[in-house]
Image 1 (cartoon, rainbow, N blue to C red):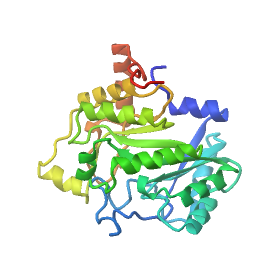
Image 2 (cartoon, rainbow, N blue to C red):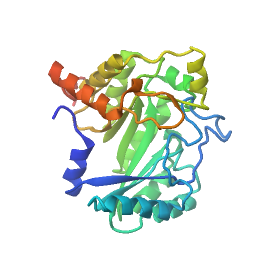
Image 3 (cartoon, rainbow, N blue to C red):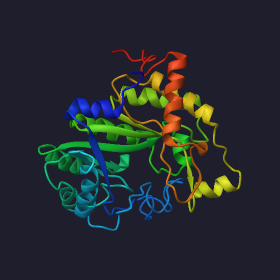
Image 4 (cartoon, rainbow, N blue to C red):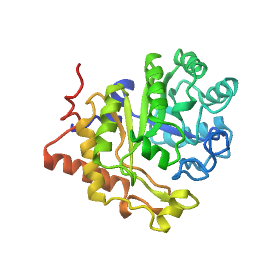
Length: 303
């Protein structure tokens, strides 16, 4: 195997296939409501980069509906995944109540919470440790890039320092850490791709989700795209960046995704007109052609 696939890791860990259930928890984001900024990250639309069709239902009903669907396919174990917006952006008592609502029965083997690096307080980590006594817990942090200038361009409103701080504290608690990275932001080059892989490896992150940049309506990025203010790299360059990232990444890191999965509605540019599986196949074929693999260039840490 040329990279460490999530599906293989989950089967190793739980003994069978595990299905993620995407939950809309009803949270917002300090980067949208004026606490830090307004409008959010330049690529984020009103759904918060999540597009579950059941988002208007109570959390428990969202989980039960999706469980029924997947159980018909013979799947028995699930991950409750709070995806949209910043899912630690509320008082701890509210967080506890909403996370609890997602743990409908023993078939939920993991609670996964996606959030911003600057919203991981010690009280939030204490709460995760409470849940960890009953169910596996993973935290997903959006970094997107290690280039602090690009972070400012995309209006993340946090720096690399906040990310490093959050990552270290999550890992210190023994909580699984997954990080989101966009490999082809218009202001990044291959050096940024390599440095991001190195930083994540040095921090011993457990998993990475690689995204290709897509453009959806009603975002600042869409305005920039229509005006010709940004240029998105070619598919060939994206594949090259993905492979280079993998080469410099620790072989211990689980790859949760290799490319984004843009929404069907409202996308004005997404994945060069290709399906997600087509691009995954192209990356895997190129790994074979180059005879390379995850961790091939992981020789830069004194360990």
